[in-house]
Length: 344
Ligand code: DAH
Image (cartoon, rainbow, N blue to C red; front, top):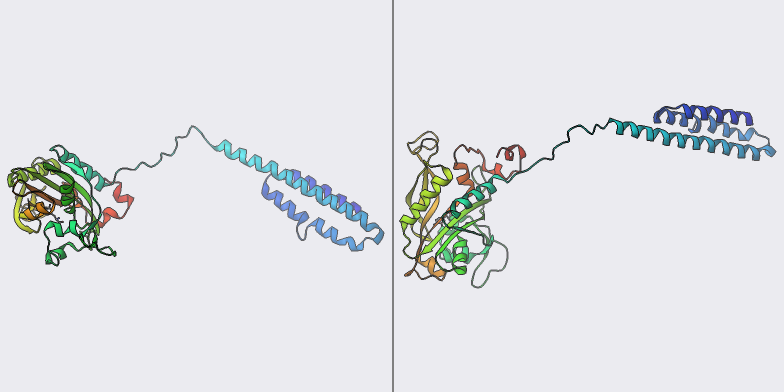
């Protein structure tokens, strides 16, 4: 019996030392220590050993088992280290590395920066006002009487909070015009404000997103007239869209301006002649007008002393109107699809 155990130990140790990789070492382990392994089966024969020899047999068996286990452990350490060295040897440090991906500003942010720069050249100061605003600033102070149907055109999101006794309900700014009153409260004329901000309306289709951006201009000084407005519009059309583009104003209605206009810019493809893209040569850009006296009064400015003009246009809209830009679905701008964003 003892000889059998010694025999098992010797073959096991030499097989272990010979194993070249962790897989064959595992096989050897199973072959001896597994449920049907040689050593396991040999130990079961303890019942056949005469009772007075059993103690000695047990001690020897333990020694054999321990020796095999230790040999497996040390061989396993040796093989793992060898494997690691081999992997390290395979790393070629002279290989060029993988460049980290480099991002860039979102195209709407790029447009905002460009628009800001265009207006900065003629003295407009970029400002920002709250995106969560009181009804007073978004509507009432802009000459919208309570319950006036024109309010419906702004498809406003209301915040579910108790209304302020004076300023009314809380809303998400449906347009940047709310900044006009904020600006008048803050500064005295002359005012040249450019408010670029997020706006929110209950709308979503290929040409509308519930969140979008507007840029709002406000000029207030003595003797400001429509010619100043028209000059500013032409300046913007040429600077932003290109030297050959011009603007025109058409009569329209807004509560907060009198007179009010819609502003068009000549189409970038046909330059005003008319083509398949634009039909009659003009593309609609947004609203403008001379600030209504009631709005000046609401902002604490005397309309007998001062006059002003204002305009408000969509950032996404002018961005898409820029030459060469054709986005079929405006919602793409905010879908975070890198395949789209990387192009700009
Ligand atoms: N706030 C208007 C809108 O969202 C746009 C607008 C029209 C702004 C005329 C103005 C303006 O400042 O004078 O539709």
